Length: 214
Image (tube, rainbow, N blue to C red; front, side, top):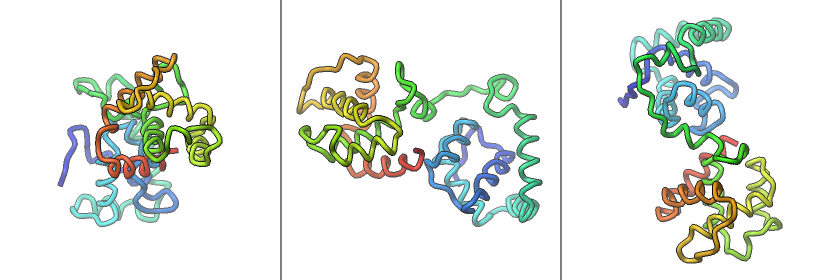
C-alpha cells in the first residue's frame, strides 16, 4: 500500500465526496475535479486515483466504517467536508501547513506559464503529442487536428500553431528559428526536455489522460 507524507485519514472525506459525484465511481486521474483536489491537498493526482480505487473496495475496518457512515447520506458528507475545510484551512497557506515543507512539483504543470494566462505546461504536453502526429507542412490553423486541439484546450487555432512553431525551434532535427515569444519558447523547451526524447507511446498515453482535465 503506497503512502504520501501529506496524506491523512481526514482526506478520505473530500475524496469520497468526489467519488460519489455523478456519475458515481472512480474518476479519471486527470479529470478537473481530481486535479483541483490534488492542488488543494498538494498530493499528486496519481496517488488520489489509487486511493479512490480503495473506496470502491474498502480494505480496512476504518475505511469500511467510513463508507458505511456516509452511504446514502450525501448531505452529512457535504457538511463534514465543509467543516473540515474550514478547520484545516484547505487551499490556504498558514496554519494548515505550519511546520510542513511543501515542495511544489506537479502543481506547476497546472499553472499558467509566464506571460500567458491561458496556457499551462499540461497544455503544452497535449500539443507536443500533436506535434509528433503531424508534419511541419500540416502545422497550420486549417488542419483538423489543430482545430480539434484548439477546441479542446479553449485556445485559438493560431495559438496552437504558435506553440507548434515553438516546438519546431526545440526540435534538434529541424532547428527552426526561435520565436520572439521567449516565455513561450522557454516553457516549450522545458516540456521538450521532459518528453521530447522519450517514448512517443508514453507521451501519447499521458496526453490522452490529460485531455480529461480540459
